[in-house]
Every structure is written in C-alpha cells, then in structure tokens.
Image (cartoon, rainbow, N blue to C red; front, top):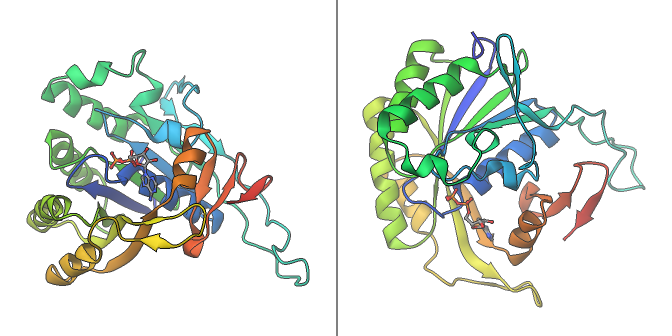
Length: 278
Ligand code: ADP
C-alpha cells in the first residue's frame, strides 16, 4: 500500500478559506525539507488546489506508472549546503526530497472541481490516498485539506483510520487568522478533531499584523492573540503567529518558494542554490 512506509502524516486544517492554510502547508513542507527530511504534500483542497502554484510547479503533469500516480518532484534530495556564515565551518543540513500530488495537476480546467458532487469528491480523496506512489520511508506526508469540515474530511479520516497505524497519523495543524469570525470557525474545526479523535499538533495564527515594506514595523491590522487564547481554551499547543508580508505574496506570485525559518524570509527558485534574502 502506498502509505505503508510513510512515517508521519500531518493534516493541515482551517475553519475558513483564505486564511493561509495552503501557504502554511507549503512553509511546513519547505522547512522540513530544509531540515533534511523527505516530504510529500498531498493537496486535497479539491475546490481550489493552489499548492502547485505555491511551489512554482503548476505547469507540471503527473506521470502514471503501472502501480499508480508518481507525485511531481518539487526538488530532489541535496547534500548539505556550505555554511551560511563564511566565518564558520558548520555545514547546513542536507535537503530532503520534496514531491507533491494535487488535483490541480490533473484538471484540464481549474473550475472543474467546483461543480463536483460529494460522492465524486469522496472517490477522488480515496484514490489520492490509495494510488499515489510516495517515495519509500517518506518522513512526512502533509495533507492540505479544504476549509471547514466537509465530505472530503470525513472520507479522508475514515480512509486514513482504516489504512494507517495510529503512530503514523501524527495529527492536525490548525490555521486561523486573528479575526473573531475566523476564530469561531476554527473552534468548530477543533471540536471536529476532538470528535473524531484526531490529535491537534497545534494552532498557527496567520496574517497577525502587517509588516511595512519600508520600515519593517509590524502593525496589528486586525486584533492579535485570538489564536493563542483559543489554543489555551482548547488546551492545544499554540505554534506561533505569522504576519501579513507583501514580500510573501510577491514571491508566491512570481513562482518563487519563500520559507520562514525562525521568522526570516528566504526564497529560492531552487531551494539552496539561489537563495534571496527578502
Ligand atoms: P487558504 O489555503 O486558507 O485558502 P492561501 O494559503 O491560499 O489560503 O492564502 C490566501 C492568499 O493569502 C494567498 O494569495 C497567499 O499568498 C496569501 N497569504 C497567506 N498568508 C500570507 C501572509 N502571511 N502574508 C501575506 N500573504 C499571505
């Protein structure tokens, strides 16, 4: 079975669309890969599969092998980079291979999925879980899910609970923005996790404040800290907040892959070989 040797499966959830769930999935994938882990990203946000665009590989096509689909490579594994600071000799981590499967690679038109009925979406989710040939011993499989709790979530969890061991299913990262409306939607998401017995790895508050491109000062456009309060209320970890950053949007639009390791924005068309400090 394609998921047999995957070591950790992480779902990325949000109560609402547009809060940055796919962006966070992309960031998590790139960051884990830069730490040397092999990573796969499965995009089952069937109504708006944006992950291929965020990785700058939207024109790629999935290859069909006799046993299933071969995910599209984002980058291959690479040896450690030279030290960032030339005065030290500490080499950086090797880079883990990163690959991606998304409905976006298969659709002839981006609007096709929007008109699908529930059973067709359910069938597609099951096929994505059973027919994608992830590399052996993949360290992390990140699953970008649609917003809310829909048919896709239920069939995803039903299938996962039947096909993988509890130790493989690490849990969910829940993304929210600081506004009250997003927080109240994400509470439903946390209740859903509780109901189906899915561990919450933590809450990320995205778009928490705006970083001025001129002076780099961060202004709290919306309220701030709601994600942290909610995490405390539900007794789940708070993983941190990420500001609105125009450079992030620019890089995504250009098909460049930005990464936020410890709050620093780094981007490279090819991670590791052409890094740009933004
Ligand atoms: P979702 O998956 O929740 O629908 P996306 O990840 O597609 O949301 O993000 C929606 C839009 O917001 C995208 O254009 C993305 O580039 C932008 N975005 C997300 N997070 C940030 C951020 N921290 N700063 C600036 N833009 C962001």
